[in-house]
Every structure is written in structure tokens, then in C-alpha cells.
Amino acid sequence: MTKFNEMTKFRVLTIMIFTTILISCNSEKSKNNLDKENLNQKEIESDTLTKHLKPFKSELPTIGLLMYNGVLQSEVIATSDVFAKPTESGKQIFNVITIAETEKPITTEEGIKILPDFTFENCPKLTALFVPSAYDMYAQVHNEKIVNFIKEKNKETEYVVSNCAGAQLIGKSGIADGHKIVTWIGGGEQLQKDYPNLKVQNDSLVTFVEDGKFSSSNGNLASYISALNLLEKMTSSEHKKFVESYLYLDRIQNWKN
Image (tube, rainbow, N blue to C red):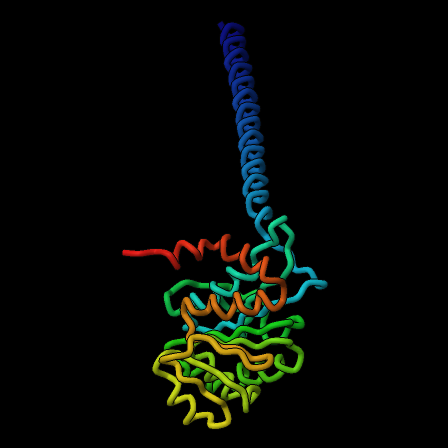
């Protein structure tokens, strides 16, 4: 009887060990399959993302988009919309970067968060600097770091563009004294009082103005005008027309209620 019990115990033990090994192997196999699936998914996601990313190429002209909390996102998006478009053959012709005082995400007036590419400290050399606006410019105009950044970048840039109340930062910096400038509709009178050395244009009549290396617009969607004007100067009228068609601007211009 004892021998029978021992044999029974041995068989049960053998079955348990075999079952444990089998379950372990299946679990490991499932884990490996899951890992492979996750890896393949990551590769797919990576390919989808990297296909659209435009690398920074030091040999290309660099367009810098200044940002700060409360910025009107349309004035950042408009410029990136225009300059990030490739040629008709698909060739990248500009670096388009965002710049802020710190590496922290910028929250736009509309609530969208944007992570800047560079800070004031590590910003590369710029060909053009675009200065956008906010509904309340007090904090920006009284921020010496922002004003000094504009002053320093003006020394190396070929073009400086302001949109809407970004003109206040241009006025504060003094870089465009003696030059024509326009701001948001209704803001010209105060701009002229605050910065008498600027030649402020009548914003009720003027949407965009260019004077030397400086240009400006009323802002918001009019920011496309300042961007497209500079794009044509830096490329050609043919490329400008291609970008306009890419953006369906003709549909907007011809749209009726």
C-alpha cells in the first residue's frame, strides 16, 4: 500500500512539474509575441512620425518664431504654414523653429501648449525673426530678456517681421526707429504715442507694410500676408504661388456665404 501511494505521489508530482513547465513556456511565448507586436507597433508609429519631421539643416536659411505665454497661435501657425512647405518637388528649403525664454511649454491665448525648439540661450543664427502678439502685451514689453533677444537677433537677421501688437516689442527694442510699421486695427495711435520714433501707419487703411528689412501686418490671419511676402522675396513668385495653392488660399478668397 505504501509503495502504491509513493507511486501515485510521484505521478502527481510529475504531472504538476510538466504542467508548470508547459504554462511557463506558453507564457514566455505569449510575452515574446506581445513584445514583438509592441516593437512592430513602435516601428510603425516611428516611421509615420519621422516621415513628416523636417530635420534642422545648418546650410538652410532659418526662420525663427518668437513665442511667449499668451501668444496668438494663428500668428505662429501662419508663418510655419508658409515657410515649412517644401518645393513642388518635395525639397525642404527652410528651417522653421520656435523660440522661447525657457524650455517650458508655451500656452497660447487659445489654450494650446507648444514646446519650443530653442531658448534664448541656445538659439541658432536666424535669417528672419517673426515677432507675434498677445492681447495683453504688458508682460512682454516689460520683459528685458525678450526685448534684449530681439535687439541681439536684429544684428544677424536679414529680416524682422512683426504681426499685430508684436509691433510694441519692435518699438520697445528701438530696432526699427525711423521705419514704417503697422499694428492691430485700432492700436496705431497708442503705438505712436509710446514710440514716437516709429513711423506708424494708419491701421484702418493699411494691412501690411514693408520698409527695408522690417515688415509688419495687422496680425491674426493677416499674418499670412507678411509671411507670403517674405517667402516670395526669399524664393520666387512661382514658389509663393505653389504655397498659396497648397494652402487653398484661393478657396478662402473666393468663398461666399
